[in-house]
Length: 625
Image (cartoon, rainbow, N blue to C red; front, side, top):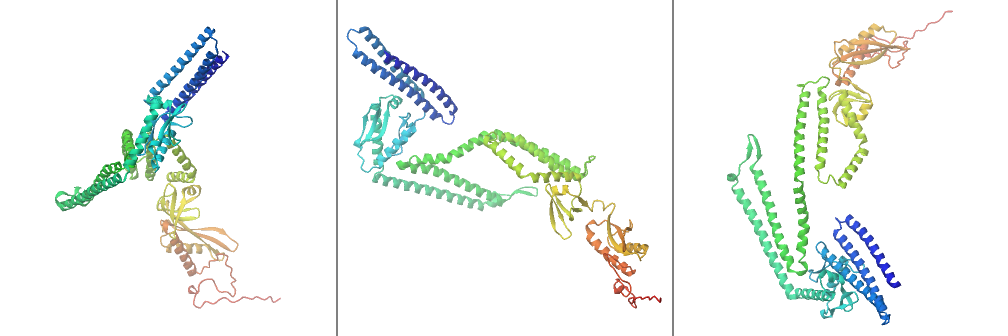
């Protein structure tokens, strides 16, 4: 009786563990249901079958123990014997109930579980395996049996009569010379509603038939006939391809002959949408596409026929066209499902397109000064339009984004974040230049064509973009300056006020104290009057900027409206200053020119001196004392 209690406790423990395992496995199956549905069902099935088999083993041990106790009882122990027989009957009933439960569970799984095929020697499916044995899963078993059948078929010394099945304790094994080819368990038999003995016999016969048929199919005569059939099919296919090609060429020749009758230019007023040559070119492209479509249909028909001739290639056609057709099928279905979103995107795009056109019209009117807004300059219109257009396009993208395919996927979001991070890290200087470009636009420090100076660089403005400003110097050098550098430095504009007020050209000379200042003023004004591009009104004027140790500094100031010709004006002004001063006998003592008058020539060129000019002699005075 102690032994009976032990087995009872063992049964309760196994049932408890089984219940816990079932809940845990059910949770796991729910987690991976979508991606591993078949594996989950098989795993749950195998777990439950193991639980039932464990309980059956316990019942078997209990039954064996009870039978031994009954044998040991004396004939007078009728009451105890009846009790043991009652327990034995309960165990048998429980075992039968568990077996019925196992069968019922298998029947429920048959509708939704996918088996793994065992392939014969001719690559045909012999039967399916649904359950595992020991550590081998159903898939592993199916692949192993298929491989062993192929090995038997490739054995040149195979004797089919040596294939047989043998019954073991829990399985029936199909053997070939003591090598196990396949095993049939009780679970396999339950799946097929047969005893595993009869199932083993059926599967043995299937394997023998498959190998025998493959040997017959691959005999020399059969192979020769099949090769001949392949040649015939290939020949007919080639003939059909040639007919299609010749038919296309003849059709194009006929169209070219009837070109002047059948075709005319498609035009509206002076604009030709499609000329005759373009129409013929389009027909040629369409004919070629149609030709390739016919080729594809012919191959689609011919390849399955060719592959079906040989047993080993009968599944190739299905596999090949599945590989080709599946992506197209998926693409077509995806496009069809995406059509509503595509229609929404098109509506958003066309609405925003006409909004942008309207905004452009408004800013064009401002640029042409037909529409005036107080405080808003005309040259701001196009830059402001570019900003507004960018914002409208950004808003359009925000509206379209949810309709893009894959926009809600984690991969798409991850790529978007990654691109955003790269853009943020890699474009800091570019963004700084863009912001500086916008600020410069609305500061209006210069415009295209102005002569300006930025830092040490002076030149005419060729281009100002959102990122850089380009100048052309007086030496025809093109210099590109980042807008951030323009904004952070000083900009001198020589042109902006020159048209109304005039740009003041100025240059300095230093003259000795021995020359009257009014004579110097008159000479400088005379030099300015002789200089081209300097204005008569307002009149030039002279400033005395400093009184140095040896000379006086004079500065001539004159107005001009030609800011782009500063270099030429300065050159002419300096020439004229030299000429006038030499004509009037005024020496220019800059920089720091020292002269000893006694016994030395004057600094004035000889062309401006009298013909009888002689250098003064040295004056020597003696003190009589």
